[in-house]
Amino acid sequence: MTGESKTPVPPAIPPIARNVLLPERLRDLTFEAPVIALRRHEPSRNRRFEGLYGRLYNRVIQSPALRRAAFSIWGSADPLYDLDVFVTDAVRAARTMSPLPVLVDLPSGGGTLLPFLARDGFRGTVIEVDLAAAMLQRAVALHCSITPGLETVFLQSDALDLSLRDGVADVVISINGLHVVPDHARFLAELARITKPGGRLWLISPVDGPSARSRATLAAARSLQITPRTPPTLAELGDLLEEAGFRQFHSYGGASITGVACDKV
Image 1 (cartoon, rainbow, N blue to C red):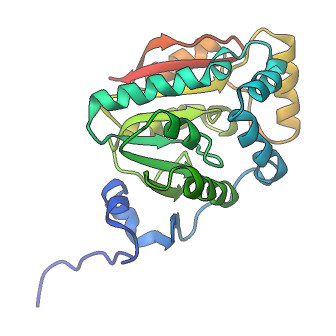
Image 2 (image 1 turned 180 degrees about the vertical axis):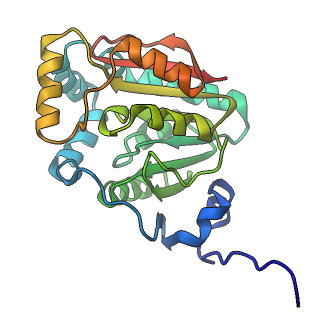
């Protein structure tokens, strides 16, 4: 019998995951329910963050009082203080795009967004993406306890080389991810690639701002190897977003940690 041979696909990978993953990557994936990973994925760049700090980060993010107390050391971190509003806006936008939208959370950490999505009654598919296996395991545990009915794909992947299809996401949410990758332009380009035309990005990120407290915190993060390079200034971030193919339509403020909502052009 002649003809092209089909690429072998691990049979255990669920159909919903196959629908959102790049076909050419399927042969290189493993599936240890419910996490999908590349057979030869890059190790996480920061084991220090994965441990105690990673557990504390989730608790802080999900508590308004702790969030305000912890991030006030940066100076101005308005979008994190009003994170509930930020996520609610993203969920409302997703609902207008599709009855069952696809929302990518990158980097997902230990399931940072899941409690917010549960409170907002999100219906659709959530793709939780993180490089750290320990973070994804926490996200899985949180999903099982808080959002068991929500269709969720857990993907261990490098944010600079995602295994997701082009234009798969109606909405991408990225909270405190830009500053932990070594290539800001490539990171935003990947977010743009996986966002469908007319889709939207909600992004929160530290920036290289004027606050002395912010600069001291960034210096400490670099010394702990949490931040591999200085994040862009607010103006530079705007240029990077535009170059990636995003058009900003709303600012959530913040001179040290800023938040923006953008359309994919």
